Length: 161
Image (cartoon, rainbow, N blue to C red; front, side):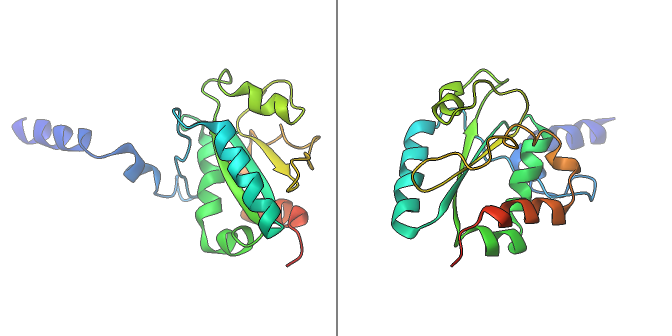
């Protein structure tokens, strides 16, 4: 019994982020990049400024660390294949939306009136024009999409190098 209590106490000390970096059930990787305290407007403004200088697009992932689909999409973005396509073509900003009640002003800034599901993914031109208005709110099944599907979606918006 004492051994079991020691094991359980030890598990309580393992950071959640360390566990979250592992593949989820072998389906897909996961990450937890959504910071509640981050100044989302400032992050987006900085990303847009960098995007204009480098002729990139901006991906704004509006999600939360509690959301399986948000963590799944963020996890794919960290994989070498995705990073090789995304890094030279996109600035990526993760915006924490809480329980769909935080940073709603960010969504509205780009023409999305409400966060209906997480993640909501905005693809922006360097000038801040929303390029995926119809499909932006349709990512709440991101964790069940295939790697190929996700890759092709973001590749279609990427500017030519």
